[in-house]
Amino acid sequence: MSKQWLDRETFKTIIDTTPLVSIDLLVRNSQGQILVGKRVNRPAQGYWFVPGGRILKNERLSEAFSRLTEAELGVQLDIKNARYLGLYEHFYDDSIFTDDAGVGGTEVSTHYVVNGFEVVLPEAESSEGLSQNGYAGLPCEQHNEYQWLSEEEFKASDEVHVHSRWYVDKTKGFKSR
Image (tube, rainbow, N blue to C red; front, side, top):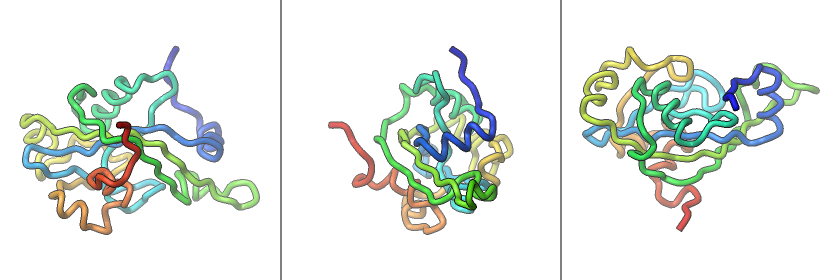
């Protein structure tokens, strides 16, 4: 079966009625710094957030992981080389459709069920496309700026969205034992 993107109205109905299943990537370079991008779209607009995206219908987790790492980082990574951080729930009062006041003027909220993964980029990727100052190859549809933060900066900054900070907080998320 093919994997598909949805038209705007179908996607709006889905966001309004069901959770989205996604992957977030805690990306570290060889120095242990964490990559964040500044969100241009709702939800979490204006916050620094880790890369990631939703899983498509009929897409295996490993396929989604490879697709998202290539789309978000410019380098395709294998899920076998990632560390699973756990399952997380993200609730937002707004959505990508917030500006389109819904039926009766109500807004559509967003609910994500997120699979968190940590990846450490090989030295080549850390120093080329995702260098400390070179982000030219990274996409700008979801993030318009990028930066590397130390773990301490990442955890302490109120400009980094709390849902992203959870990935380094061992008390958050649902861990299987």
